[in-house]
Image (cartoon, rainbow, N blue to C red; front, side, top):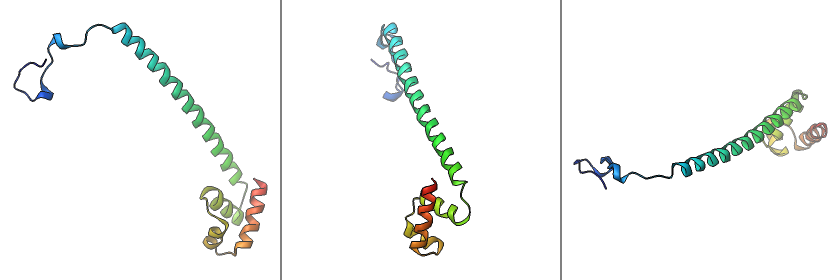
Length: 109
């Protein structure tokens, strides 16, 4: 199968008679089908990405409606995923006060 060139096995050359034979039309059709499948997958991923970008823009627009402490509470809870207790600790307020702000912010969302 491999020509004896004295080179390591992975570097040895194949002889022409050992090359794959025929089937070009079948291979071409298989490649075209594979390309169609990949194009469909790319299209699906692009639509998912577009939806995520739109959702992120809406979230940013909503966040920009808040100011001051409301913005900080909304940011920490909705973007960072903090709990009311964690936000209160982070900002130095009592849980109940942050809970009230959170309810107001979520009501507006």
